[in-house]
Image (tube, rainbow, N blue to C red):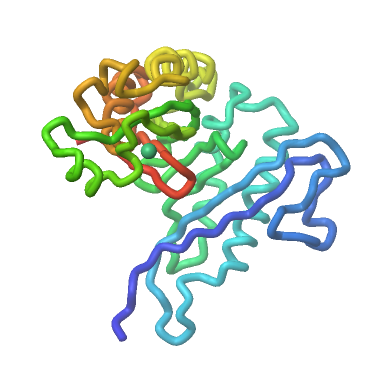
Length: 268
Ligand code: NI
């Protein structure tokens, strides 16, 4: 069998407490070492590596080796960084400095593709090998809205056949999650790619305040003629936000209609 190139993702979950979890046996690596001794941040660090798959073992890289890489090099560094004066108090700046701490120790022939630090389930930062000086921030928002999927030029039967219960004349609702990814060069003074408060004001004004608790077809001119499918909602959100975060760039919009369905747009 020819040698395959593959990508492999591994994440570790840990708390940034003063005590090193490495000093005691790992009790529950699924949930991470609990931070019950103190109120400390619990974070997730995710690595994606790429490389050839060994035809004998079927392994790209033993995951215990990736765990060691992250635990030996990343956690200690992050713990020191979070305890001391931080680089502008910002995760984006810290993560960029973490890349050269971790990357040289990646076990060959694997190579590190991305490092992602999830500081909450809804806010994460990523650096990638293409340009490890740039940092991407992914941040999630939500709005609740009703919509009706319906095409004016279709008969009632055709709408029913195409959209099923989603064409119910009085609409139906979803709790939408809008996840945006911004990419930028962290400001050397602040360590941020964008002020989080400014980012929130932009997304709230352009998207959330316009769509939350609305009937998209009836209350929002964007969808007076455009069918509010999750694909079209995603495109509308992208167009509203594209260019709004300068000097950071909007690199991806993902809209979840349900936890099982999302559409994603990264620009033309
Ligand atoms: Ni729907």
